[in-house]
Image 1 (cartoon, helix red, strand yellow):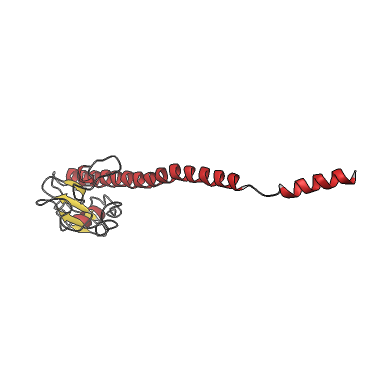
Image 2 (image 1 turned 90 degrees about the vertical axis):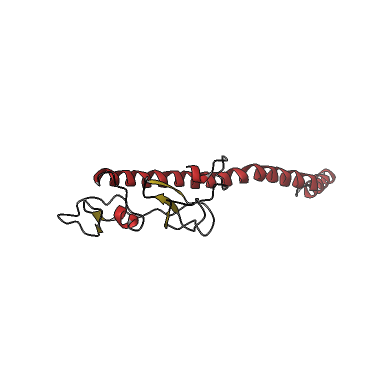
Length: 171
């Protein structure tokens, strides 16, 4: 009986670890899962930035439209657009931080949103660029705004596209 016990013990002691083939198979499976999961997660982050840009543009466009509706269809001037949208204004569009008897309109935004996508010199800024002439992306800044038409776009060159192949400047 001692002979059978020793063979059984010897067999169990050799089988404690994984074989090289088992380890290679596990590593290959993990690599395949990583190759599938990592690109999907990175696309999710890019998609989130694209959605943030669409939301910011919708917010800016609504604020500009509300401003025009209360100021005889006049859009805010480029120089004063930040103050005109974030402070109280009077009939002529003059802005001030405190509400009084003449400055009764607004504010339309708490702050101008920062650009969530684009080149490093543009991304994360809230600068409004004159959009009455020229092309998007030519001058550093976040938003390309035409005070004559009230149109606001992301100030990103038309060659830069989102994850679906749509130019950011066409949002």
